[in-house]
Length: 431
Ligand SMILES: NC(=O)c1ccc[n+]([C@@H]2O[C@H](COP(=O)([O-])OP(=O)(O)OC[C@H]3O[C@@H](n4cnc5c(N)ncnc54)[C@H](O)[C@@H]3O)[C@@H](O)[C@H]2O)c1
Image 1 (cartoon, rainbow, N blue to C red):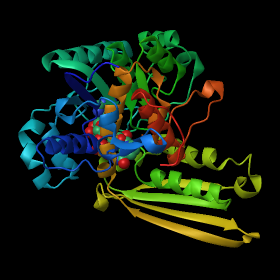
Image 2 (cartoon, rainbow, N blue to C red):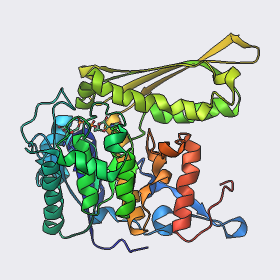
Image 3 (cartoon, rainbow, N blue to C red):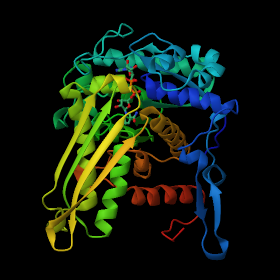
Image 4 (tube, rainbow, N blue to C red):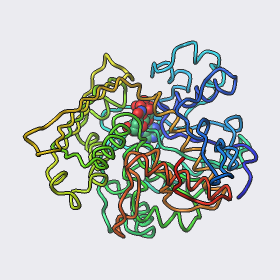
């Protein structure tokens, strides 16, 4: 394992609500003014060793993690607002939590974006690179190199926290191999090569791990897995597991372990931030819908328990409602049954009054820290142990591999990876 020495460049694609909440919070924490609540890498204690030898340690005491003090922030956006202006626009944090780090935030100016309005129709920005897909890749690579040199960074992680693109279904002739993807970029195939793929390719070409925080298919294709293997780089995605889906992956295992049946699960959200506006477009919502709908199937396993889970009506909606801003409200209604079947149905209602970016920011931090750890540890390809933070975790679907959604199983995977990297045994002992 390489040590966590020197500066880590954290390059965020998209400098909107989530990114600026993450950066401002990290800068505040450095000044001793913030709590990294929700950030497992900073707050959790994990058991290592068994029996009399067992100890509970912070993750940073088990494995060498990058310090929040050693992070340097940058990124790209289609708007020229610096991180301070963007944080104010997003309106997530109160002025008292942004003003003490105003100068540092003002100094973070986005680089011009690789953007194609066909992929996000609701946004109209002017800070955009021109060129074919391949030329965009070259310009992004140059951005990464320049940022690294100017900021004296030892390493870089690139994370997508930009808008959700329209759904790009897996298309084997382009996405099946790295050579095919490169040929499509060279041919400027604008249908199958999403702008997000240009960022991911550029990051890996510059030896940076890439994390996909939106539901975009982007790195969830064999071509990108091949590149990650070849470049010995970890990749992780997709879609931050924040509010409603976090609840789903806790409640569904409860139903399964108690053998309670599920007739239907209706989920709806109202939110009024820019993300909500983008997701109001049906073609962008579809990407999110696919990500959100996949969650309960692999937990409840209809083929193993058809009487309980063979006929579930699962619906997910997102409604753009400006008055709420970033303060999303997520409602869930579950129609469940048990003893004597559906004639004795019961309902569970969840009303989660959450804050989208307050939930997402610690996940961004955890993903950055873990991606850097994985890189230094020599882990490459899809990092399934990072599924814990993700709504639609990547898995090799060409080999019939199934994603792991159950939060508790994900936590076991996560803890065991940390234990192994720390030189301890992986186990499933009760904590
Ligand atoms: N907040 C959550 O709880 C949560 C959970 C899961 C996923 N996400 C995803 O995270 C992403 C960011 O969310 P947000 O609330 O910060 O949204 P936001 O709209 O506030 O910020 C996204 C930013 O990305 C920029 N952008 C769009 N396309 C770009 C491109 N090609 N290159 C560079 N910049 C680009 C936009 O201009 C915008 O400033 C969204 O895709 C969202 O779906 C958020």
